[in-house]
Length: 318
Image (cartoon, rainbow, N blue to C red; front, side, top):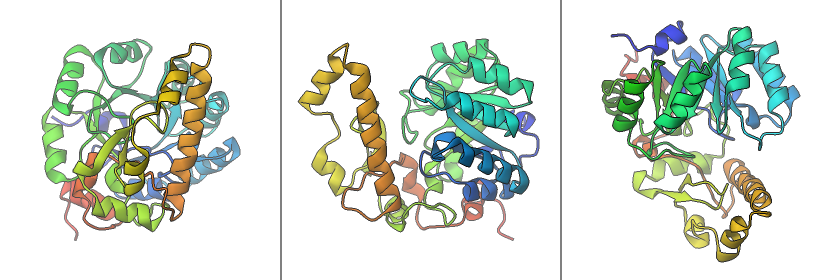
């Protein structure tokens, strides 16, 4: 049976979304992904201003050969959400992926202009909630995902969601080669969201050091840290990460337990963590904190996005 992602995004050649990656995804990567027969998605937060987002939406509308999407953080930490959503409704992408909050408003406004809404979920409880407000598909984030990973393995999460929800289930996490692609699709996934293997692509704008790290390090070198955003996040275990540790210190943990200070402490941790990631992503520095998932195990060299897609799908290079 044909994967249901094809019915949501009819012009796809392969049932794959290049996952939105904070700081990493760019317009060139998204347009190249669509030319290779998959969908591309980019976080709205990768643009410093809403004006830059509007320009990017128009560029992708003109240059993409297939479906593209925007990722929106939909909780209170994203102060720009309303203007980002308005920009998307002015120049509609094919889909929006929502993270970290209720997608209700995104679904209501997006559907008016023909935008499909897919929602990151890590468990059945939240999946039922987003299905109830009209989401078009679930992005099932499993424990092998890069960034903010889930808690369940791909097989059990897909089976649980497929058994209890009616909308398509797109699996996110752990796929980096053709055998992984076949295995997870074999669990009944309606499509795949794949991110980390695309960091080491020629179209990606991060530093050569970051790309080379994805080649050099493997799945055993991926660790969880709470020092970036307060929420567990996967990073490469570089010498600097080993030096600073992966857990918040005693003072940070104490402040996080204070009801009055907790919100501000989390915001400060997030801000400092994102600044650290930004410096590491685009410049050579000994303070290297690089986000990635276990699927970098399958990255052996820096390739074009087309070559990565061909490897994943075993499409002929002819």
